[in-house]
Length: 182
Image 1 (cartoon, rainbow, N blue to C red):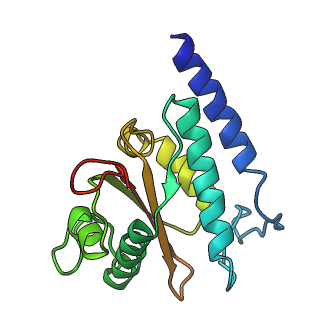
Image 2: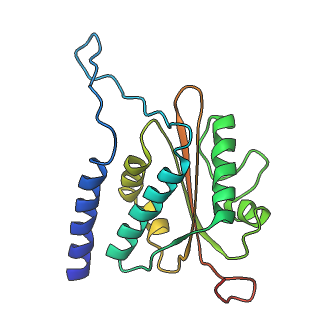
Image 3: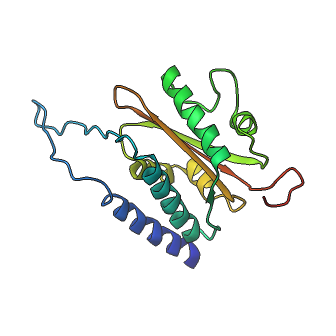
């Protein structure tokens, strides 16, 4: 119970800090007096910062859950990025690609030799850290992110012209074909 309390306390702190990480915007009100949704635009060249923040915050959550940190894995990044772009083109959420591929198929196609443990996806107008906070509020996504067997992280996103962002996070076990760490 003490471990769970520590995890929940750390998660609450993480969620509070993630709200502080982005630019401050003035809230516009609609004709009904309600706040209009804010459009988060990803600036050109922001990819490395977004990826670094996501890896850092995922690892904060994992450590709080008693799991080892993940390492960024370019081959899983490639698989996640391809799926994010594909989801945008289809304008729908799902773990099956337009060509019928699964997360395992996409990782294998990208040259990843470990086992894919899970994939989380989101369709949103929010920044990456707000998306991670939403994933952590969903049991299935939280289980993927904190899987104790995880060693590798792949992360990708695609923002279409309307501003909608498709986020994809993939966790792998880091084992090569023989089961030994890469």
